[in-house]
Image (cartoon, rainbow, N blue to C red):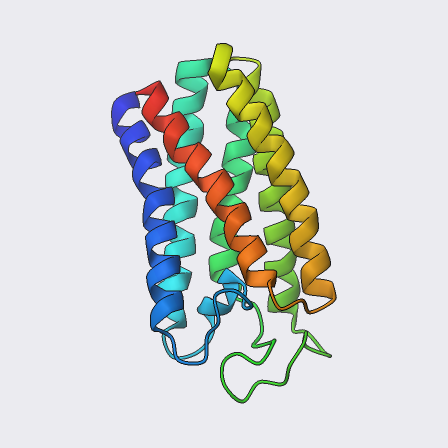
Length: 198
């Protein structure tokens, strides 16, 4: 059972990354270097990214159980579960059209964001704080290079999280790129950790 949960944990972040990149490349007027990944939840094909958030969340709930079974860290397990729940909430409550996407949307952030948009934003913040905390909690259960890699992931991740928020607030042209690097850093760590635990 633990191995099955870990295989799910390997697959889900890789699926998320693949869907994010493919959808970002095929959407007209969507600029992956500018628009954030959550913008893919809007528009006619928004359901694809919504499903992507949901599968990520379910996979991370499975991973949280496997982490507790293999590394015996309740805190690390709970934080990964919080991360997974945040992904599910992000999928269920999409952000408002913003930053000029979908086409016809005014530039910048919504002047009157809906409550769904606000929930999405709060869930995203909780997600990235939870995965940062999970790295710190799990690092204590790892040894050697894996501990160093996990702590480095936490350091780079929190720096990129702050950078993404700052870039979004000033409507920077590379906001999407910064966020994608952030996602790649954390999601790769999740998949590699699951492989390591297998």
